[in-house]
Image 1 (tube, one colour):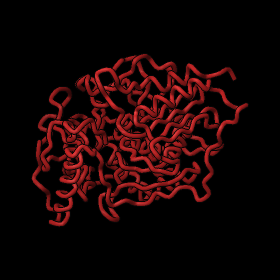
Image 2: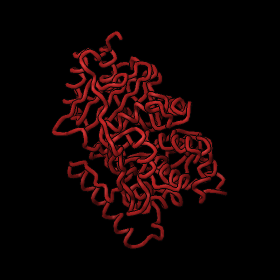
Image 3: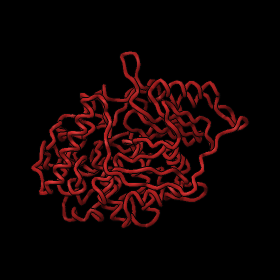
Length: 425
C-alpha cells in the first residue's frame, strides 16, 4: 500500500470512489459506502480496531502500520549471501558508488544494494539496519504476485495469463462481466475493479473494508464493485493484487506463504520472512505486507534479469519476463507488477495516468539511460531497478525521503549515476 502523507492517509487505506469518466459499465454498482455484510460481531469489532489503529498512526505522525497476524514465509535452509565483487572484479567507478550511497543515506534509506553481473559491488545499510532485517515491502509485493503466477504456470497449475479468473474464483462463474476478467488483468491492473483514490476516510467505505477486514477475501469476491469493462482501462487497485493470493491458493491447493517459500524463495536460496494474513488461517495480503530482507528482493530482480532462470534452473516460463515488462495500451509505464521506462516523462505516477494529480507523481529529472530498464516501485520510493542489457540491479529500501521545495526524490538519480559509472569490461 502507498502512503503519501497524513493529509492523504486514506490513500493507504485504499479509500476511493469510482472514477467518473471512461468506459464505465452501465449501472455497475460503485457505492461510496456499503451496508456491512453478515459477518460476525467479533469480525466487525476487529475491523473497527484495525481501522482506528491505522487512522491513529497516521494522524500521530508515526505513519506505521501494524500487521497482525503474520504467517511465516520460510527461506532457504542453507542460506549463502550473494558474493561480493573483489577489487579485480569491480566494474563500477567507486565515485559513482559513493555518490549513490550518499544519495541513499540522505534520503532516509535503510539499505542500498548494487549488483553487477553476478556480484555485489555495493552493500550499504543505514540507521542501524542489517542484512537480515526484513523490509515492510508495501507495493514491492506486487512484482511477487506476477512471479507467483508465472511459477504456477510453469508448474501447470494455471494454464496461461489469459485463463479466466472465474476458473479459480468460481463464485464469479455466470457473472457476465467478472467472468471476463483474465489472470493477466489482475497483474496489469486492468480487471475493471474500483480503483485507488484518497477521497474518503469513513470506516464503512468498501475499499477500507477490503483492506483491513478479517474476511477481506469474501469482501473482494462478493462485495467489491466492478466499474469498467475488464481489459479496457488501467486503474491502480490494490484489490487486483490482493486477489492473486486467492487465485494461487485455489489453483495449487497450497497456502500462499507456503507456495512462495517452496516455489520461489527456497529455489533462489533467499532468506525468508513473514506475510500479513487477514486472520489466523485466513488469506494472505498479496498486494502488500510481505516482509523480506533486502537481499531477497534483489534475488527476485536477478531472477527476472535472467529471464526467469536461477543458476541454470528455469523457474518461470520462457518469455514470461517479456510479458511482465510489456506495457499495455492503457498505461505505457506499467507491465505486470513492474513499471517500465517507457517514453520519457518528468513525472510518472501509479494511478490512472490521465487523472493523477501531478503533485503525487514521482520526479524523473532526466530520461533513464537504458531503454530496457524496469523496476519494482513501492511506497516510500522503495525501488529495485533492473537493467538486463547491463546486467545491473540497484535496490533502495527505507522510509519516505524528505521532501521540501528544493529537495525531492529523483527516480532517475540512482540508476543513471550507476550507469554513468560503469567501467569497460
